[in-house]
Image (cartoon, rainbow, N blue to C red; front, side, top):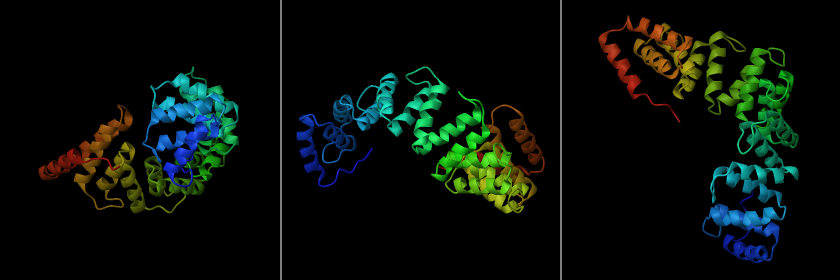
Length: 314
């Protein structure tokens, strides 16, 4: 939704109001934008909603889409998913790409409508064909999981690829996973690393952990414990339990970092608290207890203090 109307906002608002009151839908929409952002007028979502509604009722697709968003988020009006679906649908039927994506989300999550993956696929597909990156990413995920369509890894790779090229971090990470596992493409660790790195450098914790795994195993890159520890640390700092466990193991064995039982104990403690009950949690606890057997009382005290004071990085 464009926020810049050009010129002095206060003057623009005055001029737009005259046209909006005369019934011009474009002016009504633009005046709604000014109230939405508080440009030249006090920010007022309720007032913005009224002007968007006037434009939407005249068939303005941009206004219909933003009206849907306001009902979905509860901005200037009580949250109402069904009403959001109504307005998204009006705009989507006119070919509005973002509205088509938004409508796909509503069907995919079952908000305001019965959950219907097949219908979500239809609307994601329309938006994706128009280049909406988030729709392309979501379409890739749906084909990967086989929701509303037959599972098709090649089709998933196609749509993840389009979204990844537009910079969608989730799609880049998922595309890396497809190359890592050889799903829909020949297995290629080098390409997997390239995609993991792109998104890891954006701060994506899952990709940071995956990149650590690649360096730890020497898959697609030279084996490098120090580099593995670097990426595990980044993911562990964001609370990824598996990365915390892997980093703990590196401190325990002195791989890529100086051997440090207090650090190892801390990371295994954090991993155990972050893992759901199951094998991974049991493993973290088991190795933590093995580490504890080699620690002095002072080291145990230090490790417990470190674990208590640890906070995830934002």
